[in-house]
Length: 282
Ligand SMILES: [Zn+2]
Ligand SMILES: [Zn+2]
Image 1 (spheres, protein in one colour):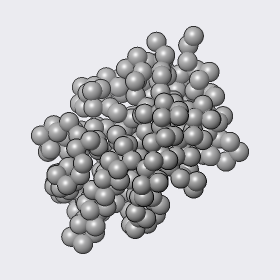
Image 2 (cartoon, rainbow, N blue to C red):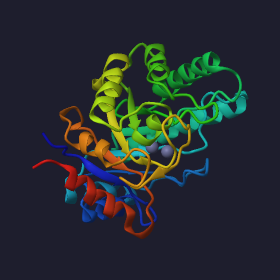
Image 3 (spheres, helix red, strand yellow):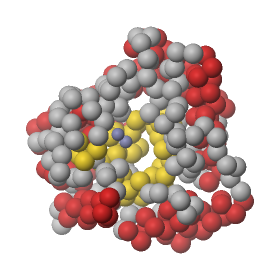
Image 4 (cartoon, rainbow, N blue to C red):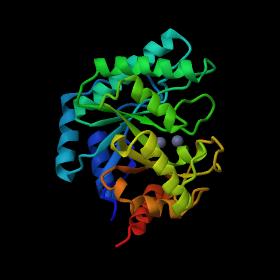
């Protein structure tokens, strides 16, 4: 059985509507976007025109599985109350921007404990997530992204994400995004049929596939367990193409957006999308 939803993270310099159209022209039937600059806290307000253009692009292309990626500045487990509050408000705003556009998913790196310890970090993430859920539009689902376990970033193991899920009492609006580069760098092997099966059996056991709403499909510059968050083109990194073949032919991932965040230079996304499609068994 083959995968249905294959796409890429798309630039928004010509607006979100054109990100959808450009993705569709490239051959994507799902995309990921920022709704604002990820390096800034501030966001330009969304106008009626921006919403209308985005929604007509969705209609033109039939693309409904669209994921928003949050700002890189957000850390709900930050050490100071000021930064935590800013992060919680920032993520709430990201969720509400999604709702304005009609984007169903908001992907977040959640946070890093910056020396306060994993336990305290998770406690702060749970507290922050509760605030975000209470103050954001119920139409939007928050996706916690698996991390490469770089530094003190939380989310490097399935168990840590599960702890947040449990902390919000299994609220259906909190789900998960698996980034293949990140989990590999965090120590989960997926290079062969055996290791791929083992890792996703673990995922099923700890989190469950019903919580998986997005996959970031990236090869890894760093080796297994290197904790290095650097994406490589498919087949050009330490994971290798066999893993991506398994991914796109696995029925468990059939209705999940599989999104490339690989290097974009020299039409990298076009090439990687073509590779992904070629991996799908007829
Ligand atoms: Zn990612
Ligand atoms: Zn990454």
